[in-house]
Image 1 (cartoon, rainbow, N blue to C red):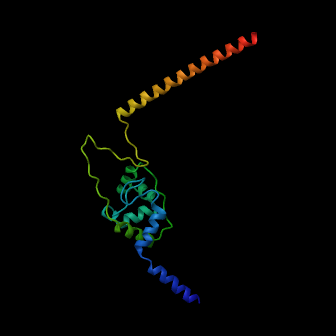
Image 2 (image 1 turned 45 degrees about the vertical axis):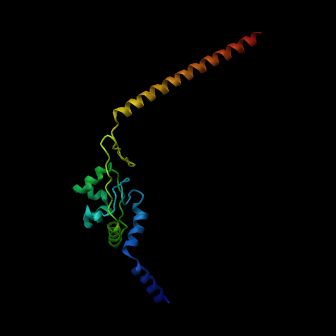
Image 3 (image 1 turned 30 degrees about the vertical axis):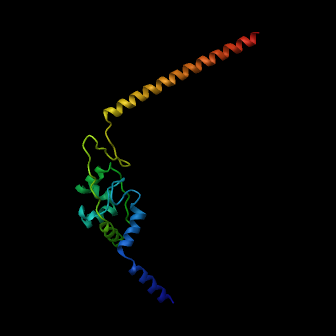
Length: 177
């Protein structure tokens, strides 16, 4: 009976496609910070094999910070390009797990470049964790909004003071009468 269970279990494991395992691992471990076709907190991972080697990918997934601290130029560049967001290490992933993840990611179609509009109409897309410089127009708007809110707050305070004064004068006159 044990032998039958073992054979069935091994058959299930052997029958599992590497791409299916990779997809499951991606959804469990990576999808929080990565998308396949576009930036999120980390880079898009579809067709990662066109940009990185499998060995580099395995080392980065296992422990990105160790690779960065070793001075690997590609790892340092990725770290800096994504606002120095620290990717958690995954030492529990086996070589087979990482290979399955690699297989899955490289089976996905590559991200399509976005057609750019005229420079005057171009709008930058911001992703979570991405910094952007403040434009002069934005700063001017914030300054005007601040002073407008400050003026409204002062007017409300003055109006409240006047109302309180009249109410207290009225009460005082009623008490004397």
